[in-house]
Image (cartoon, rainbow, N blue to C red; front, side, top):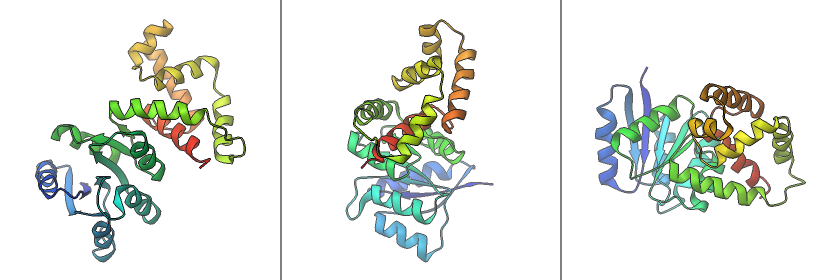
Length: 226
């Protein structure tokens, strides 16, 4: 079954290009596009469109991409939201992820990379560009340093995190530093297979699917205090 995809961006030329890219891949079905968040919501309602993935820009006139992500997630939580943006500042990234974005990539990506990111998001993975990951790591550390003693969701996450072994926490710190499995194995003098086993245990304990989802969960947990 094809992956139904919908684009939202105020650059009409980009919308046309995305349509061409994705239409050439038999795994995808382009079911619509919009030049603003308002138009996107109107089409979703009027035409009863139910995409599997929405590819969304953030910096648009009107209510913008961040509010669009939140609104779509409230109405249709099953829709996977992938941000395609030129911006990767702390505010843009953490706001989009906190509203429910499932991925965040940059417009500098090649057409093949954009398609692959959409495919990964559709399959349930969290997809973040390396530059976005770097900003997210920095933001996570900053937010994590702020007090949230009275926040139940963060307290719950911290309780789950406390169940990890010291070695698992060490691996978490290395993942937050953007280290690959190979680099982690080298630092800790263990095999890549062992690193993967540790990560599987970490994901199971914290209830996340992959390393990027772990970073997103940390960010969302930290922002719950606000």
